[in-house]
Amino acid sequence: METQSHQIPDRIAVRWPFRILAALVVLAGLVAVVGGAIAWWSHGANLPKWQMLFALPGVAWLIRVAWESAIRGRSPAPECWPFASQRVFTVYVIALLVASYT
Image (cartoon, rainbow, N blue to C red):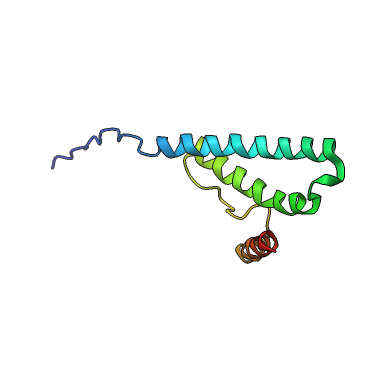
């Protein structure tokens, strides 16, 4: 009996455009967080500080998901990281949407 080992050629990385896009999301998120902190500090009470603080966990989640996608090419293991569970994340997103439209 003869066994043949099939050599599978390397596939073209289709995910690279999405990895580049995820890297841009990470960069934009970091600029938004740092820029928001600088604006908060320099302008004082003129900015809606509580909305910025309320949005910070969502921005941290987005940066982490994009970072894992850009570097490792897959989503992170606990996908809802700064939140306890997927339900808590869903409630947060709904509350953020309600707060942004009111």
